[in-house]
Amino acid sequence: MSVPARPASIANAARVLRSGVSAPITEVIAEEMPVALVYNNISHAVMMSTPADLKDFGLGFSLSEGILTRRDELLDIATEETDVGIEVRMAIALERFNLLKDRRRSLTGRTGCGICGVESLEQAIRPVEKVTAATEVPIDSIYKALTDLPGQQLVNKLTHAVHAAAWVNCAGEIQITREDVGRHNALDKLIGAMAWKDVDAAQGFAVITSRCSVEMVQKAAAARIPVLVAISAPTALAQRMADSAGITLVALARLDSVLVVTHPERITGIPGVSDQ
Image 1 (tube, rainbow, N blue to C red):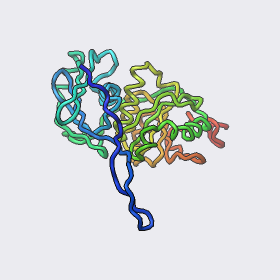
Image 2: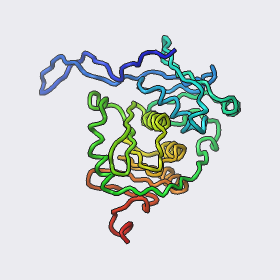
Image 3: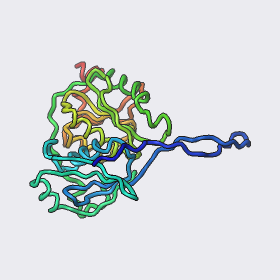
Image 4: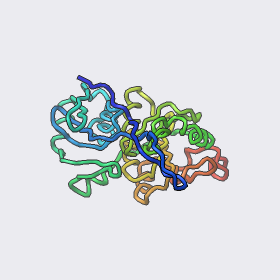
């Protein structure tokens, strides 16, 4: 049985100090709580997450972490609230569950951590299938998405404390936006929402309001996203992974400039590159 959605933010009494004067105010703050991802009655991971869009989160995490390869391998999903958090309870195909049991580990993911609890170096830098989509994204579409995205970040408008991940078509029109206190969670929620809606990842690009570490590239590759735009800089490992995975990585994305890090051939309208 699914529980009613928890609010993503709450009103909190606080005091503000300005110019030496103190006054009471009502401050809106982001909600965060433990969310357990449970497969066939076995808990696999506990993530600190914003308690919204949790079915998107469950499916997206399952796909981006390779627990599932297709949406139809998820047979059922429901949420259940406990005294200490929320469980996302998923029934998955037996073949996928048996594979999960073979690699099962206990891990806790926090807002700043994407791969806590892995048992080997091989698990941390897992191989990804190369993304070969011949997607073309006009540079002006990226600028349009960056301009429009703040208006889609409804929770962040109130709290100034959450990340967003957005799916954008090649015309620069934002189609889906998901928010979370964790940048990895926001991307997982977006991937799940795209899977529920049968979005063709070759027909657009993703924007993330965070730095781009290797886990973000791995998740994008798992979702077959050909172009990933990040507002902050990538790590060197993320750049190498994006290059080998065939992903166009755009970083330090601003309204007047971007840094095209890998596979610039997908970005059209760049003088000296796509206009030659």
